Length: 71
Image (spheres, rainbow, N blue to C red):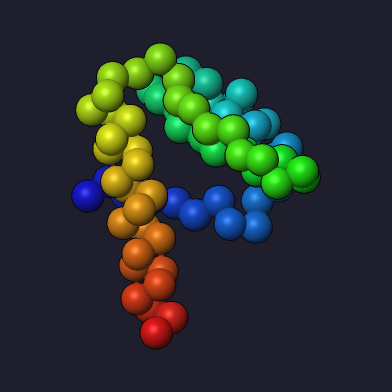
């Protein structure tokens, strides 16, 4: 599975700043934003369905491992 690095504890500004600094190395982006009013916006960059699926599965696997380790 793809290696996933946690962004937990990282500020929104740090995430976007790092993205801009490393723009040439980024192939695809999938993001979900929870707004202060409780709504969620989600989307992805112009990428293939297969790449979006890989991004989704990678974060799912990362989250599942975190839950297993805390039990």
